[in-house]
Length: 500
Image: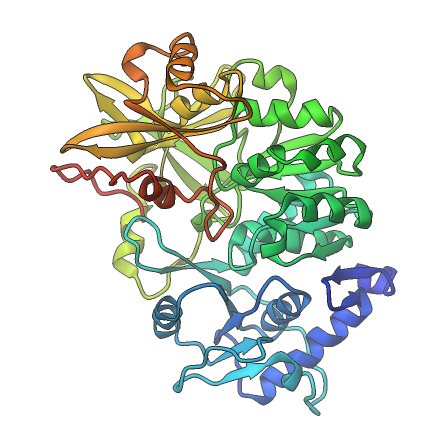
Protein backbone atom coordinates (compact mmCIF):
# COMPACT_ATOMS: atom_id res chain seq x y z
CA UNK A 1 0.00 0.00 0.00
CA UNK A 2 2.22 2.75 -1.32
CA UNK A 3 -0.50 5.26 -0.48
CA UNK A 4 0.65 5.10 3.15
CA UNK A 5 3.90 6.78 2.06
CA UNK A 6 2.59 9.05 -0.71
CA UNK A 7 -0.45 10.45 1.10
CA UNK A 8 -0.62 8.94 4.61
CA UNK A 9 -3.53 11.12 5.69
CA UNK A 10 -5.91 9.97 2.94
CA UNK A 11 -8.81 7.90 4.22
CA UNK A 12 -8.34 4.18 3.61
CA UNK A 13 -11.46 2.59 5.13
CA UNK A 14 -14.52 3.73 7.03
CA UNK A 15 -17.55 2.05 8.58
CA UNK A 16 -20.26 3.55 10.76
CA UNK A 17 -18.12 3.51 13.90
CA UNK A 18 -14.64 4.54 12.80
CA UNK A 19 -12.42 5.64 9.94
CA UNK A 20 -8.72 5.01 9.36
CA UNK A 21 -6.27 6.87 7.18
CA UNK A 22 -3.60 4.85 5.39
CA UNK A 23 -1.04 5.77 8.05
CA UNK A 24 -3.43 4.74 10.83
CA UNK A 25 -4.29 1.51 9.03
CA UNK A 26 -0.63 0.50 8.67
CA UNK A 27 -0.03 1.40 12.32
CA UNK A 28 -2.93 -0.74 13.55
CA UNK A 29 -1.98 -3.64 11.29
CA UNK A 30 1.61 -3.68 12.52
CA UNK A 31 0.53 -3.32 16.18
CA UNK A 32 -1.99 -6.13 15.81
CA UNK A 33 0.73 -8.18 14.14
CA UNK A 34 2.89 -7.62 17.20
CA UNK A 35 0.03 -8.77 19.41
CA UNK A 36 -0.38 -11.90 17.31
CA UNK A 37 3.34 -12.68 17.55
CA UNK A 38 3.14 -12.16 21.30
CA UNK A 39 0.39 -14.80 21.39
CA UNK A 40 2.61 -17.28 19.58
CA UNK A 41 1.34 -16.94 16.02
CA UNK A 42 3.90 -18.21 13.52
CA UNK A 43 4.08 -18.37 9.74
CA UNK A 44 1.49 -20.77 8.33
CA UNK A 45 -0.74 -20.76 11.42
CA UNK A 46 -4.45 -20.33 10.76
CA UNK A 47 -6.30 -17.41 12.36
CA UNK A 48 -10.10 -17.51 12.24
CA UNK A 49 -11.73 -14.10 11.78
CA UNK A 50 -15.22 -13.74 13.26
CA UNK A 51 -16.27 -10.22 12.23
CA UNK A 52 -19.19 -8.52 10.56
CA UNK A 53 -18.36 -6.28 7.60
CA UNK A 54 -16.17 -3.70 9.31
CA UNK A 55 -12.86 -1.85 9.40
CA UNK A 56 -11.84 -4.32 12.12
CA UNK A 57 -12.05 -7.19 9.63
CA UNK A 58 -9.69 -5.38 7.25
CA UNK A 59 -7.18 -4.74 10.04
CA UNK A 60 -7.36 -8.37 11.19
CA UNK A 61 -6.98 -9.84 7.69
CA UNK A 62 -4.02 -7.58 6.85
CA UNK A 63 -2.36 -8.28 10.20
CA UNK A 64 -2.64 -12.02 9.56
CA UNK A 65 -0.95 -11.59 6.20
CA UNK A 66 1.58 -9.22 7.78
CA UNK A 67 2.92 -11.93 10.09
CA UNK A 68 2.74 -14.75 7.54
CA UNK A 69 -0.37 -16.39 8.99
CA UNK A 70 -3.41 -17.64 7.05
CA UNK A 71 -6.73 -15.93 7.71
CA UNK A 72 -9.96 -17.93 7.71
CA UNK A 73 -13.08 -15.72 7.55
CA UNK A 74 -16.12 -16.95 9.49
CA UNK A 75 -19.66 -15.69 9.01
CA UNK A 76 -21.18 -14.16 12.15
CA UNK A 77 -24.56 -15.26 10.79
CA UNK A 78 -23.60 -18.93 10.51
CA UNK A 79 -25.12 -21.42 12.97
CA UNK A 80 -22.76 -22.65 15.71
CA UNK A 81 -22.73 -26.15 14.21
CA UNK A 82 -21.23 -24.93 10.94
CA UNK A 83 -18.69 -22.73 12.72
CA UNK A 84 -17.72 -25.72 14.86
CA UNK A 85 -17.12 -27.86 11.74
CA UNK A 86 -14.94 -25.18 10.17
CA UNK A 87 -12.93 -24.61 13.34
CA UNK A 88 -12.44 -28.36 13.81
CA UNK A 89 -11.28 -28.68 10.21
CA UNK A 90 -8.76 -25.84 9.95
CA UNK A 91 -7.58 -25.97 13.60
CA UNK A 92 -6.84 -22.23 14.01
CA UNK A 93 -4.36 -21.16 16.64
CA UNK A 94 -6.90 -18.54 17.76
CA UNK A 95 -10.13 -16.80 16.80
CA UNK A 96 -10.05 -13.03 16.39
CA UNK A 97 -13.25 -11.05 16.82
CA UNK A 98 -14.77 -7.70 17.68
CA UNK A 99 -18.07 -9.16 18.86
CA UNK A 100 -18.95 -8.12 22.44
CA UNK A 101 -20.19 -11.64 23.32
CA UNK A 102 -18.71 -13.91 20.68
CA UNK A 103 -19.36 -17.60 20.29
CA UNK A 104 -16.42 -19.32 21.98
CA UNK A 105 -14.93 -22.79 21.83
CA UNK A 106 -13.19 -24.22 24.87
CA UNK A 107 -10.30 -25.64 22.83
CA UNK A 108 -9.50 -22.50 20.79
CA UNK A 109 -8.67 -19.11 22.36
CA UNK A 110 -11.06 -16.33 21.28
CA UNK A 111 -9.51 -12.86 21.52
CA UNK A 112 -10.89 -9.42 20.87
CA UNK A 113 -8.95 -7.29 18.42
CA UNK A 114 -8.85 -4.29 20.79
CA UNK A 115 -7.09 -6.42 23.43
CA UNK A 116 -4.28 -7.41 21.04
CA UNK A 117 -3.83 -3.83 19.85
CA UNK A 118 -2.64 -3.02 23.37
CA UNK A 119 0.46 -5.20 22.94
CA UNK A 120 3.66 -3.67 24.31
CA UNK A 121 5.84 -5.58 21.84
CA UNK A 122 7.61 -3.64 19.09
CA UNK A 123 5.52 -3.38 15.93
CA UNK A 124 5.79 -6.44 13.74
CA UNK A 125 7.86 -6.48 10.56
CA UNK A 126 6.12 -7.40 7.32
CA UNK A 127 6.59 -11.08 6.43
CA UNK A 128 6.81 -11.34 2.64
CA UNK A 129 6.81 -14.80 1.14
CA UNK A 130 5.11 -17.34 -1.04
CA UNK A 131 2.63 -19.28 1.08
CA UNK A 132 -1.08 -19.63 1.77
CA UNK A 133 -2.86 -16.30 2.24
CA UNK A 134 -6.35 -17.35 3.25
CA UNK A 135 -8.75 -20.28 3.40
CA UNK A 136 -12.34 -19.73 2.28
CA UNK A 137 -14.90 -22.36 3.24
CA UNK A 138 -17.49 -23.21 0.61
CA UNK A 139 -20.16 -25.87 0.77
CA UNK A 140 -19.89 -26.92 -2.87
CA UNK A 141 -22.14 -29.70 -4.11
CA UNK A 142 -21.83 -31.91 -1.02
CA UNK A 143 -23.11 -29.44 1.59
CA UNK A 144 -20.01 -30.07 3.71
CA UNK A 145 -17.73 -27.06 4.25
CA UNK A 146 -14.45 -27.38 2.35
CA UNK A 147 -11.54 -25.04 2.82
CA UNK A 148 -10.19 -23.55 -0.40
CA UNK A 149 -6.53 -22.62 0.14
CA UNK A 150 -5.38 -19.57 -1.82
CA UNK A 151 -1.69 -18.70 -2.02
CA UNK A 152 -0.20 -15.23 -1.81
CA UNK A 153 0.97 -15.32 -5.44
CA UNK A 154 -2.49 -16.27 -6.71
CA UNK A 155 -4.06 -13.61 -4.48
CA UNK A 156 -1.70 -10.89 -5.69
CA UNK A 157 -2.22 -11.87 -9.34
CA UNK A 158 -6.02 -11.71 -9.02
CA UNK A 159 -5.90 -8.30 -7.32
CA UNK A 160 -3.44 -6.82 -9.83
CA UNK A 161 -5.40 -8.11 -12.83
CA UNK A 162 -8.64 -6.67 -11.49
CA UNK A 163 -7.07 -3.26 -10.87
CA UNK A 164 -5.71 -3.24 -14.41
CA UNK A 165 -8.99 -4.38 -16.01
CA UNK A 166 -11.20 -1.90 -14.14
CA UNK A 167 -8.71 0.97 -14.09
CA UNK A 168 -8.91 1.55 -10.33
CA UNK A 169 -6.89 4.49 -8.95
CA UNK A 170 -6.39 6.56 -5.82
CA UNK A 171 -9.58 8.38 -6.74
CA UNK A 172 -11.59 5.16 -6.39
CA UNK A 173 -14.25 5.26 -3.68
CA UNK A 174 -15.71 1.81 -3.16
CA UNK A 175 -18.90 0.69 -1.47
CA UNK A 176 -18.54 -2.92 -0.27
CA UNK A 177 -21.81 -4.81 -0.52
CA UNK A 178 -20.91 -8.50 -0.35
CA UNK A 179 -20.28 -10.14 3.05
CA UNK A 180 -16.59 -10.35 3.93
CA UNK A 181 -16.71 -14.12 4.54
CA UNK A 182 -17.46 -14.36 0.81
CA UNK A 183 -14.39 -13.98 -1.42
CA UNK A 184 -16.40 -11.96 -3.95
CA UNK A 185 -15.96 -9.02 -1.58
CA UNK A 186 -12.17 -9.15 -1.99
CA UNK A 187 -12.45 -7.69 -5.49
CA UNK A 188 -13.69 -4.57 -3.70
CA UNK A 189 -11.61 -4.62 -0.52
CA UNK A 190 -8.08 -5.47 -1.51
CA UNK A 191 -8.13 -3.96 -4.99
CA UNK A 192 -9.19 -0.63 -3.52
CA UNK A 193 -6.48 -0.70 -0.86
CA UNK A 194 -3.73 -1.61 -3.33
CA UNK A 195 -5.00 1.17 -5.64
CA UNK A 196 -4.84 3.70 -2.80
CA UNK A 197 -8.58 4.41 -2.85
CA UNK A 198 -11.15 4.50 -0.05
CA UNK A 199 -13.37 1.65 1.16
CA UNK A 200 -16.80 2.50 2.54
CA UNK A 201 -18.50 -0.17 4.64
CA UNK A 202 -22.10 -0.41 5.75
CA UNK A 203 -23.76 -3.25 7.70
CA UNK A 204 -24.83 -5.99 5.33
CA UNK A 205 -28.32 -6.08 6.84
CA UNK A 206 -28.90 -2.39 6.13
CA UNK A 207 -27.74 -2.78 2.52
CA UNK A 208 -30.59 -5.22 1.93
CA UNK A 209 -32.69 -2.04 1.93
CA UNK A 210 -31.95 -0.31 -1.42
CA UNK A 211 -32.43 3.10 0.20
CA UNK A 212 -29.22 2.53 2.22
CA UNK A 213 -27.27 1.68 -0.92
CA UNK A 214 -28.40 4.72 -2.89
CA UNK A 215 -28.04 7.12 0.05
CA UNK A 216 -24.51 5.87 0.74
CA UNK A 217 -23.53 6.23 -2.92
CA UNK A 218 -24.76 9.81 -2.85
CA UNK A 219 -23.36 10.83 0.55
CA UNK A 220 -19.94 9.17 0.11
CA UNK A 221 -19.53 9.98 -3.62
CA UNK A 222 -19.08 6.28 -4.40
CA UNK A 223 -17.78 5.57 -7.91
CA UNK A 224 -17.19 1.79 -7.75
CA UNK A 225 -19.08 -1.18 -6.37
CA UNK A 226 -19.40 -4.87 -7.08
CA UNK A 227 -22.20 -7.26 -6.23
CA UNK A 228 -24.28 -10.18 -7.49
CA UNK A 229 -26.92 -9.91 -10.23
CA UNK A 230 -29.51 -10.94 -7.61
CA UNK A 231 -28.57 -7.89 -5.53
CA UNK A 232 -28.73 -5.74 -8.67
CA UNK A 233 -32.31 -6.91 -9.26
CA UNK A 234 -33.16 -5.90 -5.70
CA UNK A 235 -31.86 -2.40 -6.46
CA UNK A 236 -33.65 -2.21 -9.80
CA UNK A 237 -36.96 -3.10 -8.17
CA UNK A 238 -36.71 -0.16 -5.76
CA UNK A 239 -38.26 3.29 -6.31
CA UNK A 240 -34.88 4.75 -5.32
CA UNK A 241 -33.32 3.35 -8.51
CA UNK A 242 -34.14 6.69 -10.16
CA UNK A 243 -31.24 8.13 -8.14
CA UNK A 244 -28.82 6.17 -10.34
CA UNK A 245 -29.19 8.74 -13.09
CA UNK A 246 -27.65 11.47 -10.93
CA UNK A 247 -25.20 9.30 -8.99
CA UNK A 248 -21.40 9.37 -8.99
CA UNK A 249 -21.18 5.67 -9.86
CA UNK A 250 -18.75 5.02 -12.70
CA UNK A 251 -18.04 1.28 -12.42
CA UNK A 252 -20.18 -1.70 -11.42
CA UNK A 253 -18.83 -5.25 -11.51
CA UNK A 254 -21.31 -8.13 -11.42
CA UNK A 255 -20.23 -11.59 -10.26
CA UNK A 256 -21.16 -14.74 -8.40
CA UNK A 257 -24.03 -15.53 -10.79
CA UNK A 258 -24.83 -15.12 -14.47
CA UNK A 259 -26.35 -11.69 -15.26
CA UNK A 260 -28.98 -11.40 -17.97
CA UNK A 261 -29.12 -9.05 -20.93
CA UNK A 262 -32.16 -7.47 -19.26
CA UNK A 263 -30.11 -6.75 -16.12
CA UNK A 264 -27.46 -4.86 -18.07
CA UNK A 265 -29.90 -2.93 -20.22
CA UNK A 266 -31.85 -1.88 -17.14
CA UNK A 267 -28.69 -0.45 -15.59
CA UNK A 268 -27.89 1.57 -18.69
CA UNK A 269 -31.46 2.83 -18.85
CA UNK A 270 -30.81 4.80 -15.66
CA UNK A 271 -27.11 5.55 -16.17
CA UNK A 272 -25.95 5.15 -19.81
CA UNK A 273 -22.36 6.17 -19.00
CA UNK A 274 -21.88 3.42 -16.41
CA UNK A 275 -19.03 1.00 -17.11
CA UNK A 276 -20.39 -2.50 -16.43
CA UNK A 277 -18.13 -5.53 -16.01
CA UNK A 278 -19.07 -9.19 -15.99
CA UNK A 279 -16.87 -10.94 -13.46
CA UNK A 280 -16.41 -14.71 -13.52
CA UNK A 281 -14.41 -17.09 -11.40
CA UNK A 282 -14.89 -20.00 -9.00
CA UNK A 283 -13.52 -19.59 -5.48
CA UNK A 284 -10.95 -22.27 -6.35
CA UNK A 285 -9.39 -19.94 -8.94
CA UNK A 286 -9.01 -16.94 -6.61
CA UNK A 287 -11.90 -14.49 -6.59
CA UNK A 288 -12.32 -14.00 -10.35
CA UNK A 289 -10.42 -14.94 -13.50
CA UNK A 290 -12.23 -12.55 -15.85
CA UNK A 291 -13.34 -8.93 -15.57
CA UNK A 292 -14.96 -8.22 -18.91
CA UNK A 293 -16.30 -4.79 -19.84
CA UNK A 294 -19.68 -5.01 -21.56
CA UNK A 295 -20.97 -2.78 -24.34
CA UNK A 296 -24.41 -2.41 -25.94
CA UNK A 297 -23.00 -3.92 -29.14
CA UNK A 298 -21.82 -7.04 -27.31
CA UNK A 299 -25.06 -7.80 -25.51
CA UNK A 300 -27.13 -6.98 -28.59
CA UNK A 301 -26.10 -10.45 -29.75
CA UNK A 302 -28.32 -11.91 -27.02
CA UNK A 303 -25.82 -13.09 -24.41
CA UNK A 304 -23.54 -11.68 -21.72
CA UNK A 305 -19.97 -12.92 -22.32
CA UNK A 306 -17.49 -13.53 -19.51
CA UNK A 307 -14.72 -12.44 -21.87
CA UNK A 308 -11.10 -13.54 -21.71
CA UNK A 309 -9.07 -14.91 -18.79
CA UNK A 310 -6.69 -12.73 -16.79
CA UNK A 311 -3.01 -12.68 -17.79
CA UNK A 312 -1.33 -15.88 -16.58
CA UNK A 313 -4.65 -17.78 -16.58
CA UNK A 314 -5.61 -20.37 -19.20
CA UNK A 315 -9.02 -21.67 -20.32
CA UNK A 316 -9.47 -25.16 -21.78
CA UNK A 317 -12.82 -26.60 -22.88
CA UNK A 318 -13.43 -30.35 -22.71
CA UNK A 319 -16.27 -32.16 -24.47
CA UNK A 320 -18.40 -35.13 -23.50
CA UNK A 321 -15.85 -37.39 -25.18
CA UNK A 322 -13.08 -35.89 -22.99
CA UNK A 323 -11.48 -34.31 -26.03
CA UNK A 324 -10.25 -30.70 -25.91
CA UNK A 325 -12.56 -28.37 -27.86
CA UNK A 326 -10.93 -25.79 -30.12
CA UNK A 327 -13.93 -24.94 -32.31
CA UNK A 328 -16.01 -21.80 -31.76
CA UNK A 329 -19.63 -21.96 -30.62
CA UNK A 330 -19.20 -25.50 -29.32
CA UNK A 331 -19.87 -25.83 -25.58
CA UNK A 332 -17.65 -27.79 -23.27
CA UNK A 333 -16.79 -28.01 -19.59
CA UNK A 334 -14.40 -25.25 -18.63
CA UNK A 335 -11.06 -26.20 -17.08
CA UNK A 336 -8.88 -23.38 -15.70
CA UNK A 337 -5.12 -23.35 -15.28
CA UNK A 338 -2.40 -20.88 -14.45
CA UNK A 339 -1.27 -18.60 -11.66
CA UNK A 340 -4.62 -18.15 -9.91
CA UNK A 341 -5.22 -21.83 -9.11
CA UNK A 342 -5.86 -22.73 -5.49
CA UNK A 343 -3.30 -24.71 -3.51
CA UNK A 344 -5.99 -27.35 -2.91
CA UNK A 345 -8.72 -28.06 -0.37
CA UNK A 346 -7.47 -27.96 3.20
CA UNK A 347 -7.05 -31.52 4.55
CA UNK A 348 -8.91 -32.95 1.54
CA UNK A 349 -6.28 -34.43 -0.83
CA UNK A 350 -8.70 -36.91 -2.41
CA UNK A 351 -11.30 -34.24 -3.15
CA UNK A 352 -8.54 -32.00 -4.50
CA UNK A 353 -7.31 -34.70 -6.86
CA UNK A 354 -10.80 -35.09 -8.33
CA UNK A 355 -10.96 -31.49 -9.50
CA UNK A 356 -7.29 -30.57 -10.04
CA UNK A 357 -6.64 -32.50 -13.22
CA UNK A 358 -3.33 -33.22 -14.98
CA UNK A 359 -4.83 -35.54 -17.62
CA UNK A 360 -6.43 -32.90 -19.87
CA UNK A 361 -3.40 -31.03 -21.21
CA UNK A 362 0.04 -32.67 -20.83
CA UNK A 363 2.22 -30.92 -18.29
CA UNK A 364 -0.49 -28.58 -16.99
CA UNK A 365 -2.71 -28.73 -13.91
CA UNK A 366 -6.26 -27.57 -14.54
CA UNK A 367 -9.22 -27.02 -12.25
CA UNK A 368 -12.42 -28.70 -13.42
CA UNK A 369 -15.09 -26.05 -12.90
CA UNK A 370 -18.28 -27.94 -13.71
CA UNK A 371 -19.34 -24.93 -15.83
CA UNK A 372 -20.49 -25.29 -19.43
CA UNK A 373 -18.93 -22.58 -21.59
CA UNK A 374 -18.34 -21.86 -25.28
CA UNK A 375 -16.12 -19.45 -27.22
CA UNK A 376 -18.04 -17.19 -29.59
CA UNK A 377 -17.07 -15.73 -32.96
CA UNK A 378 -15.52 -12.70 -31.23
CA UNK A 379 -13.17 -14.97 -29.27
CA UNK A 380 -14.96 -14.24 -25.99
CA UNK A 381 -16.09 -17.00 -23.68
CA UNK A 382 -19.79 -17.23 -22.82
CA UNK A 383 -21.14 -18.99 -19.75
CA UNK A 384 -24.02 -21.37 -20.49
CA UNK A 385 -24.83 -23.05 -17.18
CA UNK A 386 -23.61 -25.56 -14.67
CA UNK A 387 -22.98 -28.92 -16.33
CA UNK A 388 -25.44 -30.53 -13.91
CA UNK A 389 -28.09 -27.84 -14.61
CA UNK A 390 -28.17 -28.42 -18.36
CA UNK A 391 -30.97 -30.95 -18.49
CA UNK A 392 -32.60 -33.10 -21.12
CA UNK A 393 -36.36 -33.36 -21.26
CA UNK A 394 -38.11 -35.29 -24.01
CA UNK A 395 -34.79 -35.35 -25.84
CA UNK A 396 -34.46 -31.55 -25.76
CA UNK A 397 -31.38 -30.00 -24.14
CA UNK A 398 -32.36 -27.13 -21.84
CA UNK A 399 -30.16 -24.67 -19.97
CA UNK A 400 -31.91 -23.24 -16.92
CA UNK A 401 -29.83 -20.07 -17.27
CA UNK A 402 -30.92 -19.64 -20.89
CA UNK A 403 -34.53 -20.28 -19.90
CA UNK A 404 -34.32 -17.70 -17.09
CA UNK A 405 -32.76 -15.21 -19.53
CA UNK A 406 -35.69 -15.64 -21.92
CA UNK A 407 -38.33 -15.15 -19.20
CA UNK A 408 -36.58 -11.99 -18.00
CA UNK A 409 -37.13 -10.45 -21.46
CA UNK A 410 -40.93 -10.71 -21.19
CA UNK A 411 -42.50 -7.25 -20.90
CA UNK A 412 -43.50 -6.55 -17.31
CA UNK A 413 -41.14 -9.16 -15.81
CA UNK A 414 -38.43 -7.59 -13.65
CA UNK A 415 -36.65 -10.80 -12.59
CA UNK A 416 -36.92 -14.49 -13.42
CA UNK A 417 -35.22 -17.75 -12.54
CA UNK A 418 -35.96 -21.36 -13.42
CA UNK A 419 -35.40 -24.34 -11.12
CA UNK A 420 -36.06 -28.04 -11.37
CA UNK A 421 -38.50 -29.70 -8.98
CA UNK A 422 -39.91 -33.14 -8.26
CA UNK A 423 -43.09 -33.56 -10.30
CA UNK A 424 -44.48 -36.84 -9.00
CA UNK A 425 -41.14 -38.54 -9.51
CA UNK A 426 -40.44 -36.85 -12.84
CA UNK A 427 -38.28 -33.82 -13.60
CA UNK A 428 -40.30 -30.62 -13.64
CA UNK A 429 -39.27 -27.04 -14.34
CA UNK A 430 -40.69 -24.13 -12.34
CA UNK A 431 -40.36 -20.56 -13.56
CA UNK A 432 -40.24 -18.01 -10.74
CA UNK A 433 -41.04 -14.48 -11.88
CA UNK A 434 -41.27 -11.04 -10.30
CA UNK A 435 -43.39 -8.53 -12.17
CA UNK A 436 -43.80 -4.76 -12.17
CA UNK A 437 -47.33 -5.17 -13.52
CA UNK A 438 -50.12 -7.64 -12.90
CA UNK A 439 -49.56 -10.57 -15.24
CA UNK A 440 -51.24 -13.95 -15.46
CA UNK A 441 -49.63 -17.31 -16.09
CA UNK A 442 -51.26 -17.43 -19.52
CA UNK A 443 -49.81 -14.00 -20.44
CA UNK A 444 -46.29 -14.89 -19.33
CA UNK A 445 -46.44 -18.27 -21.03
CA UNK A 446 -47.75 -16.79 -24.28
CA UNK A 447 -45.06 -14.08 -24.33
CA UNK A 448 -42.29 -16.56 -23.46
CA UNK A 449 -43.40 -18.90 -26.25
CA UNK A 450 -42.43 -16.21 -28.78
CA UNK A 451 -38.85 -16.35 -27.46
CA UNK A 452 -38.27 -20.05 -26.83
CA UNK A 453 -39.71 -23.33 -28.14
CA UNK A 454 -42.84 -24.69 -26.48
CA UNK A 455 -40.91 -27.80 -25.43
CA UNK A 456 -38.60 -25.67 -23.26
CA UNK A 457 -41.27 -23.74 -21.37
CA UNK A 458 -41.59 -24.29 -17.60
CA UNK A 459 -44.24 -26.71 -16.38
CA UNK A 460 -45.49 -24.12 -13.92
CA UNK A 461 -45.03 -20.45 -13.10
CA UNK A 462 -44.72 -19.06 -9.58
CA UNK A 463 -45.16 -15.32 -9.03
CA UNK A 464 -43.04 -13.88 -6.22
CA UNK A 465 -42.79 -10.37 -4.82
CA UNK A 466 -39.00 -10.41 -4.91
CA UNK A 467 -36.21 -12.93 -5.30
CA UNK A 468 -34.84 -13.92 -1.86
CA UNK A 469 -31.12 -13.51 -1.23
CA UNK A 470 -28.97 -16.03 0.61
CA UNK A 471 -25.90 -15.62 2.81
CA UNK A 472 -23.68 -14.35 -0.02
CA UNK A 473 -26.26 -12.06 -1.64
CA UNK A 474 -26.93 -14.74 -4.24
CA UNK A 475 -30.33 -16.18 -5.04
CA UNK A 476 -31.66 -18.48 -2.30
CA UNK A 477 -32.96 -21.28 -4.54
CA UNK A 478 -33.85 -23.63 -1.67
CA UNK A 479 -36.09 -20.97 -0.12
CA UNK A 480 -37.85 -20.33 -3.44
CA UNK A 481 -38.71 -24.00 -3.83
CA UNK A 482 -39.71 -24.41 -0.19
CA UNK A 483 -42.03 -21.40 -0.12
CA UNK A 484 -43.71 -22.67 -3.31
CA UNK A 485 -44.26 -26.04 -1.67
CA UNK A 486 -41.93 -27.79 -4.14
CA UNK A 487 -39.25 -30.39 -3.57
CA UNK A 488 -35.91 -30.45 -5.44
CA UNK A 489 -35.71 -33.08 -8.16
CA UNK A 490 -33.38 -35.96 -7.39
CA UNK A 491 -32.51 -38.20 -10.32
CA UNK A 492 -32.89 -41.93 -9.69
CA UNK A 493 -29.63 -42.56 -11.52
CA UNK A 494 -26.56 -40.81 -10.10
CA UNK A 495 -25.07 -38.04 -12.15
CA UNK A 496 -21.42 -38.20 -13.18
CA UNK A 497 -19.03 -36.92 -10.50
CA UNK A 498 -19.16 -33.15 -10.42
CA UNK A 499 -16.52 -30.73 -9.16
CA UNK A 500 -16.76 -29.90 -5.51
